[in-house]
Length: 113
Image 1 (cartoon, rainbow, N blue to C red):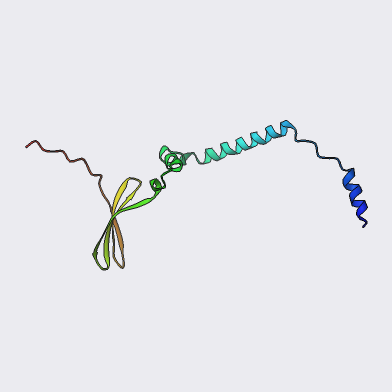
Image 2 (spheres, helix red, strand yellow; image 1 turned 180 degrees about the vertical axis):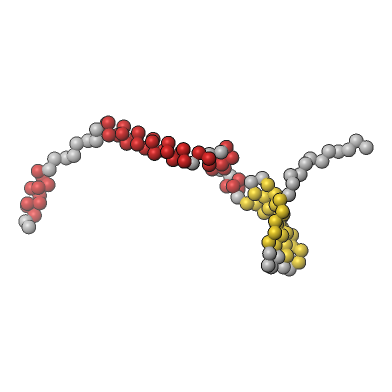
């Protein structure tokens, strides 16, 4: 093939017309419909706490925090763990792990005695 044939074909082609405005509107409507379907499917995940955690600048808000750790002997230790504001006592040995949820500490009332 001769290169002049290719150049003549390229010159004969017209540039593509710009995208009509109504096609852009259709694309926006389709995108909005897909977003609405996605929101309907995931609506149970949109609680105030989850949104606050997702939008938070503090990454520790959604993590597990080990508050304290004590070794009882060389093979056994206890941990005080906080998950989403709830505290648990975790005991770990070489062959087992057990945990116990802790009741929320109530403010001690001073006695008037």
